[in-house]
Structures are given as structure tokens and as C-alpha cells.
Image 1 (tube, rainbow, N blue to C red):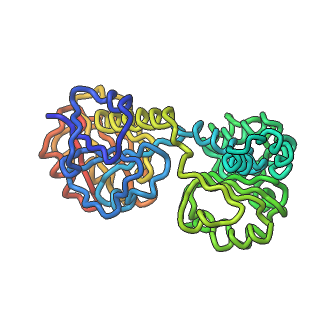
Image 2 (image 1 turned 120 degrees about the vertical axis):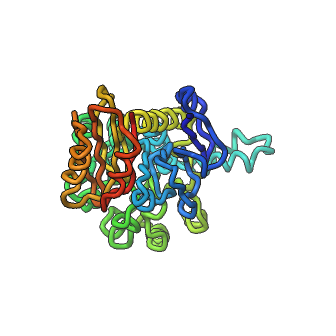
Length: 388
């Protein structure tokens, strides 16, 4: 029996090619065991009992009903870092576009293309598009995940003085960052010091609208602000006021909406951050590999609603995966079921994340539907799946 995969958006062929003969791409999401998605909105979709996983070929997951999926035992994956280089490169270009009026100069050439003396006229006109260099300027990076670290290192190599702030900085990202980067503990230190500020944090309830009048008032006059994360991180009414007053010299944002498209002194790009062939390929391949690891071995890597959990490749007769609520005495109830059936547990891995938990059992005999039914009847169990 094949595993059915539905693609809600076009997914790079180099990723889909990683599915083996045991997988089939199907048109109907209701018939799918797993879904691959990029930007398609899933909040209003009805999720079938058959669905076990959703893999987002990208980092942001605000188009996916994370809690709803968790409640139904559907593990949601994303691909952090797979598109990081593409975003880093556009952030670097955004810094230069904001520092020097290259866009204005290009538009001037278009407007004067019929002038036979355009070369001579350009020498007089170009002073209107003069700008400043980024070398020697101070760059502040809020959020030092995969993208933020690459931006920090690139800015450092371009001769900028780089400051970074991330209360959740991982060991791996810290090790990948140049030692010339100055780490600060508060956003206020970045606001007061930096000529450029770029934001690379996820959209959460706690970060929505975090860049507001209070934040802008603490920034240096004439700061250049770059936003390639999410438009709603910024209070756009307060941004308009900051741009009109000159507090913010330039705003570069990768999310066009009716407000951003009409803001003064703003460069708006049409969500191009990760729109490179390489990024799309990397995200597709990473998403497919994570799906296969989950489907074939039960292991979870890069989930946003369940804990990461790795029991390696199963070497025993059977393996069972249980998605459940993170509540008291669940493990003892599970082990009692196996004990009552005379089944020995060779290995067990249990991980929790907030209200949810995930447990893998490697057992000495083949997993059966009867065992699944018994486990499923335990209060707090969400979904049980036979891996082997």
C-alpha cells in the first residue's frame, strides 16, 4: 500500500524525486497521508483523520493551523535554514538600495531614455541620487537564527560594525557567527547604536507589532529599517509617522499590502526573500527528507508543534509511535498495556513540548492493530501509529 502525498503548492521536482516507489502524489488532500505546502492557506481546511503530517517548504508557518494540527496528532514540520542564504543576499542588496538611491537613478534613466544627450544630462542629474556607503556603519540584527547569523557575518565582511540580539541564541548559531559580532542583551542597545536595523524573528503573539512608536523613538535619527520577516511585526501607522518625521530614513519591506505600498521613503519588494531556485530546491529536499524520516522511522526533526524525537532506525521487531497530551502518568499507562500483552519494550524515547508529547516504543514483537486500539483508548492519547 502506497503512502499518499498531496502538494498544496508546486514543489520543486528535485525534492519530490526523493520519494521512493512506496509514495504516490495524489490530487485530493482528503486522500493524503501527508501534505507538502509553501504559502497555501490551510486554516479553513478540514483535516482528515488519515493525515499524519504537514511539511512546510519554508520557515514561516503562519498559514498552517498549528494548534489544530497538534490536537489531531498531525505533526507540522518546517525547513529552518534551507532558504537562509537567499534571504541573506536580498538583505545585503536592500542595505545598499536603501543607502544609495539606485532605484531613483534607474527610474531617471527610464524617464529620459529618449534624450539624445542623456549621457551629458546624467552627469548633472546624478547628484540627486547620491548616497552613503555601508562600510563603517553600525548594523543591528534582531534575531540570530539561521538567517540572522548569515546576515551578521556578511555585514561584518562588508566592513560594518555589527551588533546582534537574540535571547534564544542557539549554541550552533553562536558557533557559526563571527567573533567580531557584538552581542547585546537588549533591543534598546541596538536601537540607540545602530544606523541600520534588520529584523529576523518569527511572527508570534509576543512579536506582533513589536516595532511601534515606543521602539522608533529609541532609535537613532535617520535609521534605515529592513524587514524581511513579516509585515505585521511592524505597527504600520507608527512606521508612517516615523518615516514622515525622518526618524526612520528608509524602510525596506518584503511584504506588499495596501499600507506598505503607499508608505513614503519605502522600498517594497513582492516577497522575494526566498524566491531563488536554490532556496526552493533546498526547502523541497529538506521537507521531503523530514517527511520520509517521520513516516518510515517515526522520528521527528524540525517540528513546530511536537517535540523533536529521534530513536534512530528500528532494529527490533516492531515500533509504535504515540502522539499524546503532556499529562501525568501517561508512560505508566502505556507500559501497562504492553505488559498485559506480554510484550517487552526494548527501547523507549519520550519527549514533550508544552501541552503535547510524543513517545516511540521499540518492542520485541510485531506491532498489532489490537495494541493500537488499547493504546488509543487511554485518556490523553491523540494518535497511535504502527511504524513497523
